[in-house]
Image 1 (cartoon, one colour):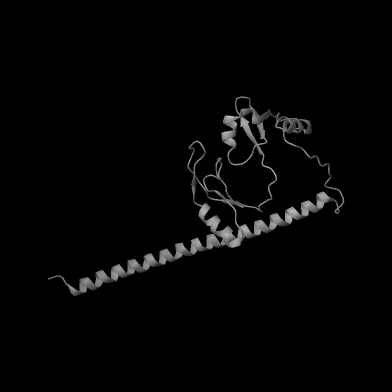
Image 2: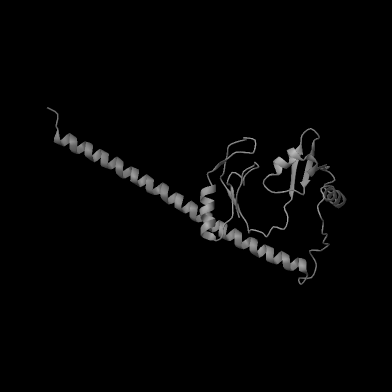
Length: 203
C-alpha cells in the first residue's frame, strides 16, 4: 500500500492511496503520488504531497473508523468511532450521525479500558478481547503474530525506502543533467555570437 501523507481526508478518492503488486509498481505509484495536489471532501486545500507511507496490504475482514481530534469548545480530546469505515466516512457522519460514536477523554486520566469497551459497545462493534502480556512465552499465538507482522512491516519499509531512494536519485540526476545542458546551450550561444561578430567586424 502506498499512501499519501497529507493532513486531510479523502486521499483514497483523490488517488492518493494505491495498491502495488510488486516493488516496480510501488515505485511507480510513489512517483505518481509525490507532488500531487489533494483537496479534501469539502474542497479544502489543495495539499501538496511530499511524503508517502508504505505498508503491507492486509486482508480486510471489516472496516472501522477511529480518530482523535482536539475539541476546542470542550478543551478536551474527542475520540470518535464508527463500525462503518472506508472512504465514505464523512458522508456517513452526515447521513447517519448515530453511526459515529463520540467520547471526550480527560487528558489527565487518559482512555480507560472501561471507556474503550463502552465506546465499542455503543458503536455496535463486535469485540474479541485478547488478554496478553509482552512477557509471555515466545511460543504464544500473540508473540508469533507479532513476529510475522513485524517481519512484513520491515519488508514493506525496506521496499518503500528503496523505491523512494531510487526516485530521489533519478530526480537529482535529471536536475544535474538539465544544469549541464543549460551550460552547453549558454556556451553554444556565446560561441555563435562570437563567430557572428568575427564574420561582421564593425566598419
